[in-house]
Length: 266
Image 1: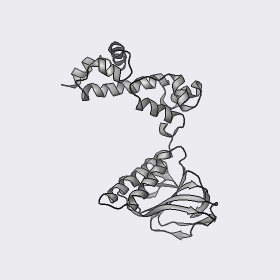
Image 2: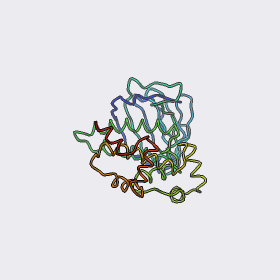
Image 3: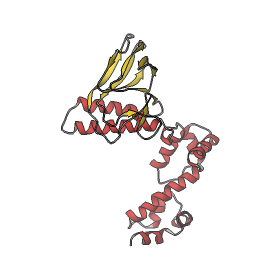
Image 4: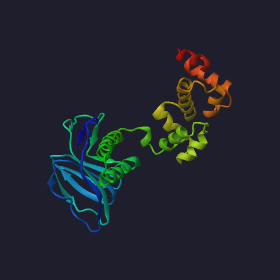
């Protein structure tokens, strides 16, 4: 089932926590006034909702909606561990007919998105450690969690086990260019597979994608850091010298960096 959630609405956590089940137990048969989100840390659980059947497995999230009856299909496996969040619904939450921003399926595989688990853990932490800012923090984190769950349902670079480590390395190390062989080693794949993933996702080779990213960062730096000389920018972003940077920048933006800086500082 697909639901659309209002990502701009403030969110309030009614209750949350970590659960451990040494022996198999069925999920409760109930209808709650809150959304029931379950992250399966370890184990497996069969749960139904309004005639639909879901098998919750490790690193997946089950989103049981407020006002809908959910009930057991099969007991959880021994030594099951979960994290649960009970979150009050917002007026804009409603069934969706098609995928889009804010749309989340009832069952989502989050194995390639470790930040989802971290958000569950952080929400529980702040909810269990009340303070003057706790409500604001948990509300923001709930909205962020919903946004990430919506994003997981649509393929993006940060969910690709090949692209994610390669792209992350490139962005975190702006001072150098990486060879395809180095990136393939970081991603744990062949150079051929790396090239295909970059082409399929970005329409560019790994080298061309790196170049585009660096030139756009330099474009911004020319204006926001107006006192940094071009030679220093070349060093900061992995170019052998300012002359090579100028040629690449002109090819991308139609003018040399110095002229671009003067034009955008008027």
